[in-house]
Length: 538
Image 1 (cartoon, rainbow, N blue to C red):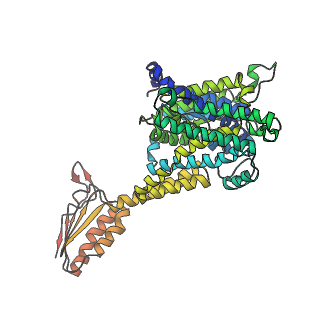
Image 2: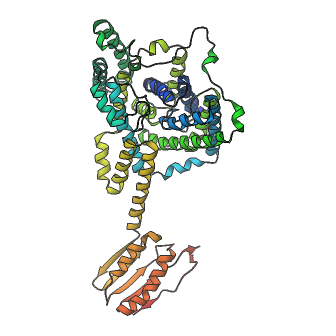
Image 3: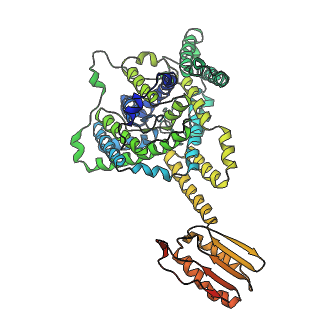
């Protein structure tokens, strides 16, 4: 178990990396800030709980993570589970006990190396997940770019929790109710980001390449909104319509620092419901984390391979601590990780830095950050979404063949029209079906030269190959001389084994010369466990 690997990473950290980790961490912070608040709101939890989870996900999980680029925080996929659990147990303090227990379960999963199960998801499905998330980000951020902020930031399900709309109907409503001020801010912000992207693709100087474009967009958004307040009051997004702005809760004057935290009610350990809720959170959070880790490795330009077991340990530590001080459950999150990668992150320092900035925002910067329009942050996220879902990815996957493209497109459509976990589940089932189909299409090959027919088994034969092999035997003609070569098949399914030997009688009746060579059920130490002598029928 490499629990202390991150400390070695930080010890070997080079200052040259900071030029890329700093702007990346800043970009992730700006993206994560409204998401933390929106997910807390969608979960029916205190707003500070989302920020607490974001801080823990950044600093604590970032430090112990098995990945250099993964970023953790509260996850939209858990919002419904959290809201339902709080209702069931009766209080947020009682729910926090389940979060602590879920963290303990994840820690144990990491110790027993359960992270290996991430390898069961087909590559086409992981690729489809990334593209789908990119499309969903764009679809969900267009309403915010147009000034319609009825839905929570971070609600990435098709059916929206906040206003009863769905992803598509929300787009129609957003066009109907578009705010001129929000449109101007988002269009200019998006135009700046596109222009900056083109500039950095040509100019490789570190000052240009590592410039924090997201920060400029935020400053531009604040400045434009303040200009509207003075020059075009009808376009102003503040004061009378605070839902258009980031909304960090401000600590009331005279209140203790600890007044913003909630603490678990451990008397609820006697309630059996708590353990079921904890297991659900641990399972779903671990699944989302493992999926995102697979995706983040695909995005990583350095092509590093993350430690899934260490990541589960890190998530467990994070959730235990988050639950202890009133935070929501944390997972590794695709949106933050994508923003981190496309922000140019080199190491885990960017994730840790984003957590530090969230911490400073909670205690020092609330009043200033509440001046940020959501429409300019929407532009930042739309750019992230486009990079995840470029049309070239569809073209490349199509060229890879139908066995790759169909699971890919099923995953994309499934996630867009349901949610992340359902889409992944459907895509994985379809992917596995195609893997099995492709695999069993190549278990043997048949060659015919006149009356000479040879059937060579290329690998183990399982029962799914039976229909294809039965069809091959059925194609044999009277007078054929047939050799079935099983030397490359260490295992042959019992049904197929019996079918091959039973066909001897059919061959005799039809006048087919039929020979079985090294056809056996299985081998042990090179010798057949159950075998019949090679036979020839004339």
